[in-house]
Length: 192
Length: 142
Image 1 (cartoon, helix red, strand yellow):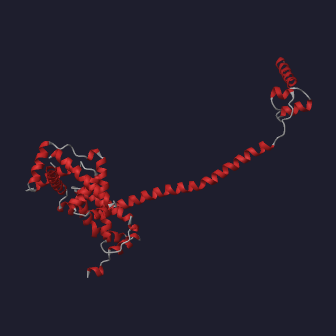
Image 2 (cartoon, rainbow over the protein chains, first blue to last red):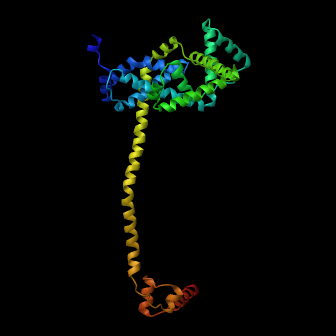
C-alpha cells in the first residue's frame, strides 16, 4: 500500500534535482539513519556523527545530477558511498590536526585495556572507558588503514564491496588491508 | 618459530577486531545523532553557504574567461598603437633644416610676440635687451 502512495527514491531524486526542497527533505528523512549508522562505525561522539550526516547530505545535494538510479537500492548504495567518503575525509582531517590527536596511552591504561579485552565489559562505565581507549589506539592508524579495517571487520564488507564503496581497485583494497593489519599488530604489541 | 608467530598474529588480529568494535558509537547515541533537532535546517544552511561559495567562484571564473577572450583584442590594439606611433617617424626622412647662430645659442625660434617684433624690425635679442635696460634706466633716473 505504502509503495503505491510513497514516491520512489529515484522519483524524489528527480524532483529534488529540479529544485523541489520538499523532495530532498523526504530523502533525508528516509536515509538519515543509514548515514548515521555508517558514521557511527568510524566516530564515537554524537557531534561527529551529526557532522558526517550534514556533510553527506550536502554533498549528495550537489551531486544529485550525477545520480542515475536504475534499481530500488541504488540511491541507498550511492548515498553510502558518499557517507563513507565523508568519513574518510574527516579521518584524514583529524590526522592533520594535532590538537585533535590523543595523548600517549599510559601504562596503567594499557594494562586496564588489555584486561578489558580479555573479559567482556560488564557495565556502561567500563564500556565507555574501553571505547575511549580504543579510539586512542585507533587514532594511531592512518585514515586509509582505519577505513579499510573498519569496513572489513566491523561492517563485514567483502573486498569487492569495499572497492566499490571507496572507488579503489580490488588489489589496492587487499594490499591496504594487509598493511593496515600489520600496522595495527605493531601498535597493539607496543601497548598491550 | 613460524607457528608461534602466526599464533601471536592471530591473537593480535582478534584483539584488533575487538578494539575496532569497541570504538563504535552505541545504538542510542547513533539514534540521537540521526534524530538531532534542526539537522535538516543545518543541512539547508550548509547547502546555501556552498551555493554562495560556488556562485562567487563562478563569477571569478567568468571574469577570467572574459579577460582571456579580451587578450587577442588588447594585443591587436597594442600592435595598432605601435604601428601608428612608429610609421610617421620611419617615413619622414626629411633632413633637419640648417640652424642659424641664434637658434644654436637660444634654441629654436618660438612663435611668440617677441619673435614677431624681432622679425619685423630686424633686431637681434641683444639689441632688444639693451633697449629695455636703457629705457628702465631712464625711467628710474626721472
